[in-house]
Figure 1 (cartoon, rainbow, N blue to C red):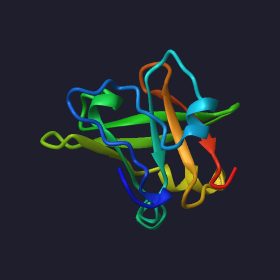
Figure 2: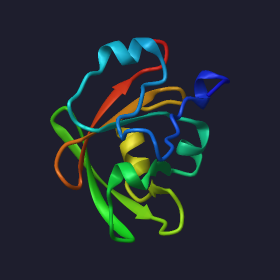
Figure 3: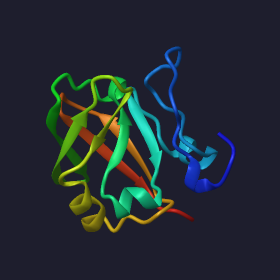
Length: 130
């Protein structure tokens, strides 16, 4: 995807694996995992509207709404993931605003969501400019 650093969400098509390619070479070198992961560069709407879109295929959520645990180091947050049946994406809603605030996330930061257990994601944060 061409454009600014802020437009670095990796979109998946049906032929791609669920392991997303990080948006730049430095992050790719730093992050290796045998687990499925998805990388997102945070944009202004993720803060103003307090939501984050993620592919339903990656999340694997079957219910319309499900609580997901996000883990960073030894802390955890519960966020609601809402699935849209006729769309390829769902979104984090309730709890996402608290997560971004308590992790001091900013526009341009990159979050890599790594699947752990069902309903649990480990979040790796790369700060913009680091």
